[in-house]
Length: 582
Image 1 (cartoon, rainbow, N blue to C red):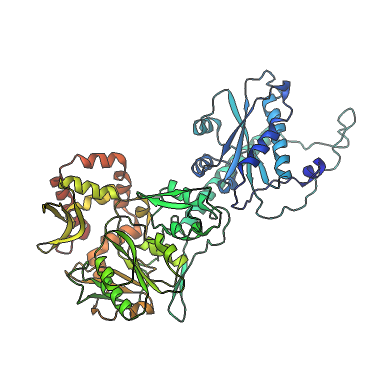
Image 2: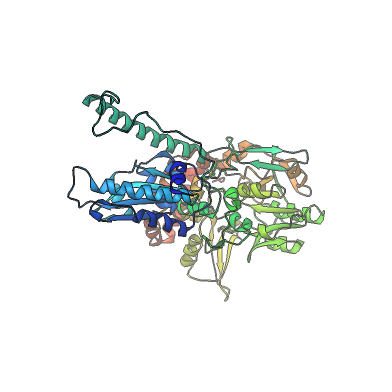
């Protein structure tokens, strides 16, 4: 490409694909800028290359052009403000020459770029990026591969060349009074302010977007996400990193399970990304439910029927009535599935025998990377999966053919909550989250020498306020609304499970259980406080956002467990309205 071709081909590109620009190209663009002429040959331009999603988000929040929040790579041009030609702004003019060189080099490399002069206030920008006072931010250059081919354009105006002096008779400049100039500046300020608010509103609407569920003739539930096909910020694992930084990760680990190059990994309740392995296939971004924490508008979503019931064979060993265990064993024995994805004491596993399913009975109140096992599931086999609402939201986008058994979920506590209870127990050993003692269900630690410590589940309700992940607080799905079958405790009847069927194949899977009719009123009577918290986000939500901090956890760690137990029981009674059902 010749210089003349580059000059005519250059366009301001504001929409980019998700493919990242290699850093060696970034360096070439900056190097081209360094060769631009500068006043008194000062060569005082400096460059801040920005590709951190969190920094870009903060940059946009301070105020800039509306499209910048969709950019992933950009260069902020700085110039030394210690100049002697204040009238003609040597620093600004020199920066303009630098930016023009950068734009032309980007065009030569086939990279889209846009020169942005609408920047946040300088003081805020200095604080965000650590810019010293002797350098002033002048302009921003956004970079990325064009989302579509640029259109041919023509230059504005007619006569632009005057010979020896300006000929006003041929080119009369438009008049603008001082007051009109002030009005235009004020209107521009209002325009920028409104654009910022509209941009924020669009983000809020997107975060609460609603997909839809459809039923095929075979009864297979399919989740349709309207954001599929977007290429601005959902096309590679950079999006996953952004979800993690914004505390929107639910640790379902579906991204781990679908990544073909194992670029995403899970360890110690954290998601990590290896950019060198990422091939920008977009699978991880499309399945991630991180910023999609909505649910059906109804209290528990759409359903066919609601029951109370139990499994005659597994009632004593399972949680509540052992319904999930009974359903899985029945499906496996009837040959309707080849395996079941369950969480055992040693982690997530594919249960292909009755014994393994029984061994995985009871709930585990800790984050478990259930969907990471998707990479081990074969496409020619039939499976069932037991998971939390967020895990099933992601599962529907990847494997809608899998029969999903969803668990009621108010909150899911981090591993630190378990560590807290173990410390209060004063012993270490085997941990049980659904242990039973004298008719009560609760948390138990058993040491190797036989000593044990037990506290019932109502005694540590207060921990929900301190050890719940932020994504759990945002979630609006209590009853696993996208599952085929939802199960939970029937609090009004000990040893009974609440069972909600949502699809025809879910109804067929209940064979072998003892059932009796129930209804939505029973759920709202006993667990209405959780439904209200999930759907309406009232005062309790605001309090938990305050207490769920490092300072809050520091305070609760110094409190005696007897006080925690007393407060937990009081909260339980207040939330549920008192009585046995509390």
